Length: 476
Ligand SMILES: Cc1cc2nc3c(=O)[nH]c(=O)nc-3n(C[C@H](O)[C@H](O)[C@H](O)COP(=O)(O)OP(=O)(O)OC[C@H]3O[C@@H](n4cnc5c(N)ncnc54)[C@H](O)[C@@H]3O)c2cc1C
Ligand SMILES: NC(=O)c1ccc[n+]([C@@H]2O[C@H](COP(=O)([O-])OP(=O)(O)OC[C@H]3O[C@@H](n4cnc5c(N)ncnc54)[C@H](O)[C@@H]3O)[C@@H](O)[C@H]2O)c1
Figure 1 (cartoon, rainbow, N blue to C red):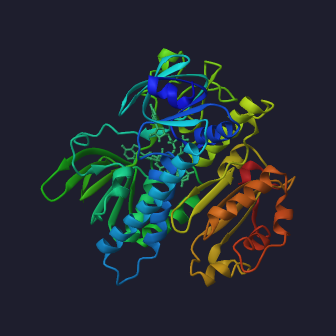
Figure 2 (cartoon, protein in one colour; figure 1 turned 135 degrees about the horizontal axis):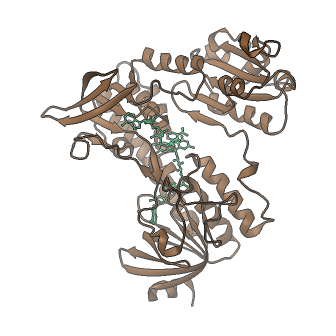
Figure 3 (cartoon, rainbow, N blue to C red; figure 1 turned 90 degrees about the vertical axis):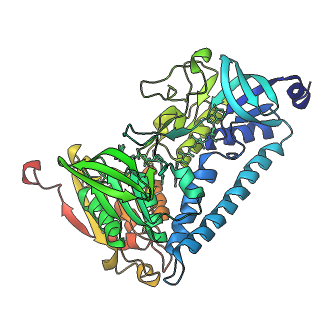
């Protein structure tokens, strides 16, 4: 029986069964199906072919970052916003369909739309619109992603003003007053986007400051850019209540023991995302979860059942698309390669926070390097002062700074924080250098095109502003 005949009978058997249309799972599915293996991929929503990133995550939000930055003074905010949302949704639709077509074009692949639930370690049930299908497979990949954490704030669950990021970016109504609960990557990116479109944005963060993992000077520079652009940032808060009224909601909070409140038309909840396992019935498959609710995996992403792997956000790792993609490399190596690739090989992972200009980081901060007792040199310069980077002036984006942390004895690049135009591209060069043992001097003395942002490395890496190598820690 081929896959179509099996499907009609309500049972399917596959070599590979992928649960969720995420980045990592679809990459493995495509490669194995292209090689003729029978693959079934189950996605619960027909609006999510391709997963979070192209539908409701990275791509639409970066489309909105871009468009919010291009708004001209005479654009009517609401009209401009509506056009931007529609343009971004059109891109999303193109990508959603493209993702589906790419898999369906492969003869030995089948996409089922419905929620997958384990029945036993080799079988899942899928409730599709047409009925129930049972799919069994030799190898199963769990790639169901993550879902928003809803904090326990009185009034939140009943509030008609509270939304998640997915709803907000699909709404064509620009909020006049947007309050964001949570100042992590998502909250900060949305603060920049909606501020750019013309909303009045207040960002409420529970920690004493935003970007607390970054060095103080980097975090303060980023925070200053957001504040100067008009974003109100209130850190160190405990949100105590959301109270819906006729013309908006009141968000009450405590800060340093003092009660305060802010009015909102819309409240975005951006308090983190947790692994999406609730519908899977992991216990029926004998797949263990961690205390934090992620699918437990070893360094080869195998779960407690050796034929079941977990990739992407659901396995509790860092939540980025490129991490899910790299998970697929590990799993593909298990299924078709030598089986040597593992999480242990993952070093110098870069990150980009897409504010404007972006903040991209890799490796150790100065604070972490010093805490680790490394003898370090720090090279740092404000973008506006980097003579070797006229591109910043050419494109009218001179805000930010670039900072490198270097091992004073070996010249090894330990880390970098680039708050600058093009930082999302620059950081990949730095990460590559770190992964392949290129020293700070080699990165400094390389040939780069002109005018480009990379040229900044010629200069910034030569500006050792602090050298802790000769100092005792007591003197720092
Ligand atoms: C607003 C936002 C912006 C982001 N921006 C960036 C960015 O700029 N760069 C970046 O690298 N990362 C970004 N991320 C994070 C990134 O989107 C995720 O880390 C990535 O998409 C996770 O991919 P994944 O492979 O884990 O699965 P996902 O892409 O999340 O896919 C999981 C799929 O499984 C489906 N599913 C869930 N349960 C079931 C079930 N029981 N049965 C069947 N299907 C199921 C879901 O519907 C979903 O389509 C962003 C996230 C958000 C929310
Ligand atoms: N550019 C990117 O790569 C990108 C962009 C957006 C999102 N993401 C990923 O998506 C995931 C979700 O992003 P996120 O920002 O929601 O999660 P996060 O965990 O990064 O940040 C959540 C923030 O909300 C705060 N918070 C939690 N509860 C709160 C409360 N009750 N009141 C006030 N503040 C509260 C936390 O202190 C934290 O700073 C992250 O893992 C992130 O990596 C990545």
